[in-house]
Image (cartoon, helix red, strand yellow):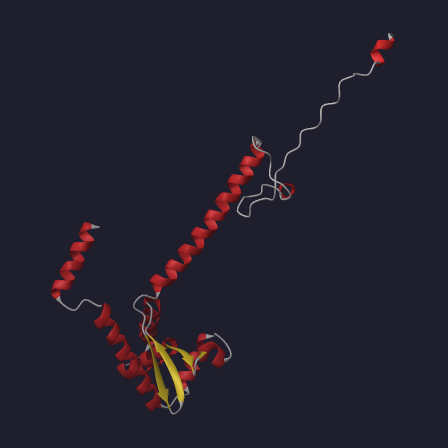
Length: 201
């Protein structure tokens, strides 16, 4: 074998190329923990697997934000038209609020088992106040009663004096009438306007 095969080149070796990538941006998504230390150099092309992972991360973030937004919007819409009122009874403050549709329906359904109008009258007050009272002296009813069982709320109403129940129920009806005045349809013209809006939608 010729000795020239082992002859070293007289030209200096070519230095390795270096990349100055700097610190990663806070808002730059990372595809994998190995990329946290440095970002790929300019011109670097993601592999198919890396592109898919990046898309999944972006989709997941968007879905999470939309889910939180939708939930908050539903909560706001569900409480539109709901009014509250504090009623003081011998130094104890009962906080009342108007009922949602499902609560009002459950209250009405409860009197179907009553045998006469007198029983129905007492039961409707009992069921209404059990749902309308949501705080006692600034504390959630569940905290004051030591549990969230609805039967505890019914028992609370059952243990009240009749004069107390009458006072709270009258205050609740005043609150309910206020809602009807503020959000309800008061005139025939208002009804027609609503019907026209429905037809246009």
